[in-house]
Amino acid sequence: MIALCLPLGIEVEIPHLLLSLVVALLAPLPLLHLAKKLIGGQTGDVAGAAQQLTEIAFLLVLSATVPA
Image 1 (cartoon, rainbow, N blue to C red):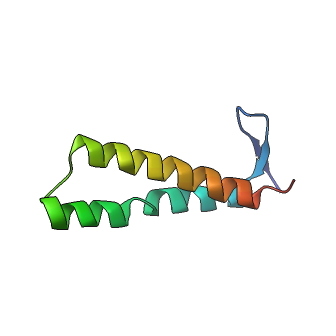
Image 2: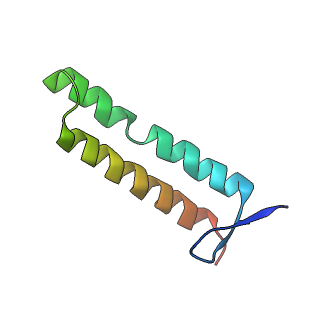
Image 3: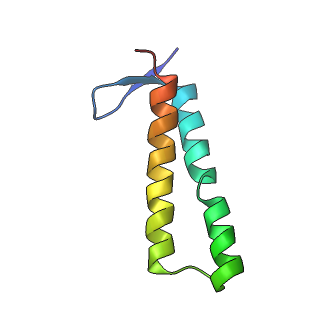
């Protein structure tokens, strides 16, 4: 299996990386939907929260799938 070396020095297999990317892309969608429903759109605070959610989701899934 092909491995990708991240800047952190961790070898990550491509399927694990792709799974992390998909989860990171989907993670902020409920927040964005809620912001659209409650306040009619996105503000800077919503954008910041979405960015943080995306990063946390990516790192959580990546750390859960990389063997110790």
